[in-house]
Length: 191
Image (cartoon, rainbow, N blue to C red; front, side, top):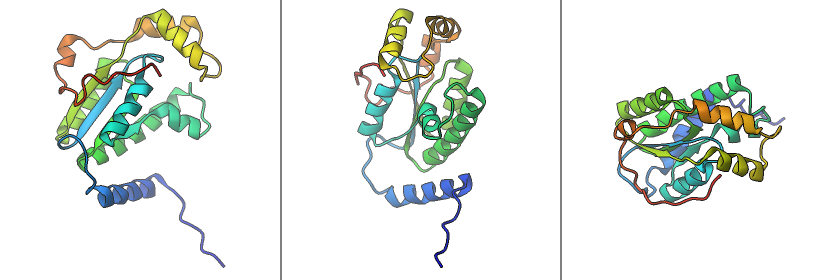
């Protein structure tokens, strides 16, 4: 009789992730020390494309709730589950930062208070923190969202207009609170 594998609980997953990271810490990594990269912007602004490029270039761990929700067959518009996934991603992200790694948060981070929590939490762990803000006019965002056709149901123009109105773009004062990006000129196409 074969032994059944242990159930994958969040605690076991975190432990396995911690062990895997420790085993691979000897790999060469660009940059010095832990670094949090926050990719900020509305849907269609290019967040995913930039985050994936940074992930590859920096050998970073990227957290994108849409991908986890899709993998779990969850409704992308389920804000309660999205919040839980983002909380789990941030918990894992902090553990990775504490281990000296580079973490990319690709949540959109529409409000300054959300960006402040990430920045201050990462700084408390001794990490450098970058903010990449991607913007485009509302009509361009809507066109890009329609072209990619990833959402079901599709996003309406009125929704993009509402999002555009409530989004809090980073000010120059806020941007000054973040470290200079390792790759400031990294160009990307929209997500």
